[in-house]
Structure formats: C-alpha cells, structure tokens
Image 1 (tube, rainbow, N blue to C red):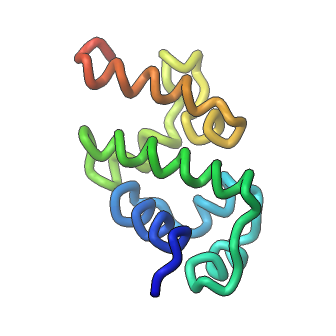
Image 2: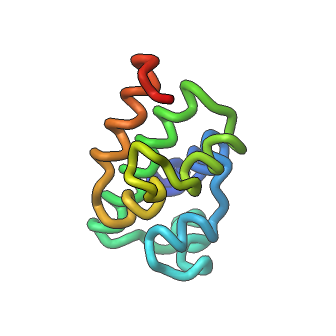
Amino acid sequence: MTSAVAKILDDLKELGGLKGVDVANIAAVSPATVSRWSAGSAHPHPKTQRLISDLRYVVDRLAEFYNPDETRVWLYAKHRLLNGERAIDLIHQGRTDEVLAVIDSLDQGTYT
C-alpha cells in the first residue's frame, strides 16, 4: 500500500513536473531522504510534511492552468506580483498564502 506521503510525491511529479531533487531542495533534505519517503521506509517530520502538502496544494491549483513542465517553470520563475520573488522560495519560507493569492488572480483573470 502506498503511503500518503508517497502519493503526494507522485502527484508533485505527475502534476507539477517536480523531481525528487526539487522536493529535496524545498524541504531542505537530501534527495536520498525524499527517495526513502517515496519508498515508505521513512516519513518526513510533521513540519516538513506540512510544507510538501502546501506545495502539492499549489501544484494542484497551478494544474488548472498549466501542464507539468509549465507548472515547474512557474514555481521557479520570479514573479512581479510576488515582488520579484520565486514561488518555490516563498513556499519554503512558509509564505504559501502569498503564492495562492497570485494563483487566485490567475483564476479571476486579473494576473498579467
């Protein structure tokens, strides 16, 4: 049976084009640790699990607008509406709500 964390990691890959190294970078762990999470042989700390859950939510929202490769680029690109910051960095810093506000503007057609 696949663990919930492994399912999240699969979704990040499928919907967001994210690789294990991307998740490792945002979670500040090694790629080997992410591999163990995927295999179900280890589990992230609750704070880290919240971080990757937030990332999954953002990726789910972006999947409404972009394909996986575009989603990955969007996460790593600097954005004017994020004051020139990258969404991936803001999520890492626990500032996911700022990223979601920009995505909401995409949904409302007000993002330029």
